[in-house]
Amino acid sequence: MASTDRRSHYQLTFVVLATAVAAFAMLQSLVTPVLAEIQTDLHTDQTTVTWVLTAYLLSASVFTPIMGRVGDKVGKERMLVVALVALAVGSLIAALAGSIGPMIIARVIQGVGGGVLPLSFGIIRDEFPEKKIAGAVGSIASLAAVGAGAGLVLAGPIVDAFNYHWLFWFPMIITAAAAIAAAVFVPESPVRTPGRISVLPAVLLSAWLVALLLALSEGEVWGWTSGRVIGLVVAAVVLAIAWVMVEQRSAAPLIDMTMMRLPAVWTTNLVALLVGFGMYASFGFLPQFTQTASSTGYGFGASITQSGLILLPTAFTMFVVGLYSTRAARQIGPKWVVVIGCLISAASYAIIALAHDHEWQIYVATSIMGIGTGLVYACLSNLIVAAVPPEQTGVASGMNANIRTIGGSIGAAVMASIITARVFPDGLPKESGYTNGFLALAIVLVAAAAVGLVIPSFERRVIEEHLVGEPEHAELGIVAAGTLIGDKSE
Image (cartoon, rainbow, N blue to C red; front, side):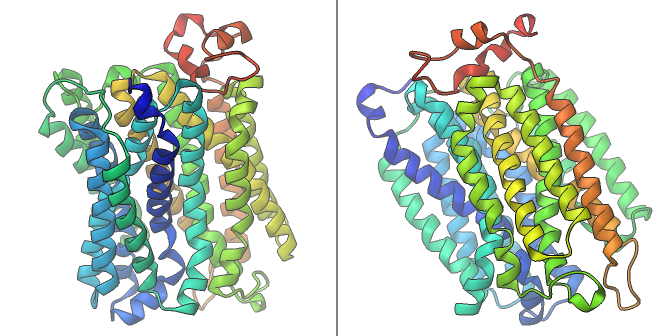
């Protein structure tokens, strides 16, 4: 644990971490509304330009847990600087890219920045006063979700005022400044995980994630029953099994499978998968819905900027609710906050599916969506951080963030299949496709609420025993620390 004099500057550390996480999260979604413009400017086709998204997703999925593990081993502050430098360098290359090849390479480099999430959670746990940990983790988790929504909102105004290259110039400037600030102001965490870092688990993890996400991202183009897609799925399953077996036998595993089997960990990760499924699928297709010309019988003919503004209530309510979710978790328990949040999110998707004739209905739905997602994200992160030893914070939180990304990939692929199952002769999806797609998301979030019921629960006296300080002043935090003690759960 950090000394008192170093901890006295934890507020400044939080500002640096929040900036880093927000920049990374925005880069996830900034380019989504302008892919058509990038396709035209870089003289490529629709299939190839999707790799601007896919390459980033693949890279982030691979490097998020790896960066967390390396940070636990060699130092979280040091690896945070590396992650931020990767974001800045990748953004610079993307801003200058004159063809699709360098753009895709740039996005792979940016994906290394996925390490900012697990590293930030680890630094908070090592450096912050115990009663401040939960609030900080919840805020950072909310920023990760809010940033993705903010990227969609900001893309239009940035492109209108400048051009799409500034979608990379601005993040480059921000992340470069954050890297310098991290090197100067963020103290090096004293907590280390002993032992060497095994190479084979990292290779196998990378291989099965790449195979899975490649199949999901290209399935619509290649055909879901094509030999390539089926082969990649089979390869992903085989490689994943091999990865688990190697990790179980490794003296220094990349991801501790014993830890992953803890009730608090696997249930939380499964909820994260399903919530990521819904959130990223909705973020990806709601703008397309609103941009569709009203002459088709649905949609509003919105511009890029207007379609982004429709998601602004989500970003706002998600962040605000995330700040106060720790209080709710202390009152009723983090398990029930997660369950309620999932049900609220499910309601928002149902509204979009069944009531989307007027813009105000979409605004109501996106506001509700942010409330539900904000409640869930903050509590999931707190549960993960509290449920594992300090030396495993980076890899555990990194894997949780990674599972959300994987869930988002699956959600986007499934949503695309549902929406494009019925199309007009000109290729535009019919209204029923969006209705069925958002109803499917509502069902997925109801399933997430059901999984949330399995998260270990405790009597109030047990929760109070794990709060730090006087009950009336304590924040959530370490409320979920008792999830490590399975025999005390209800």
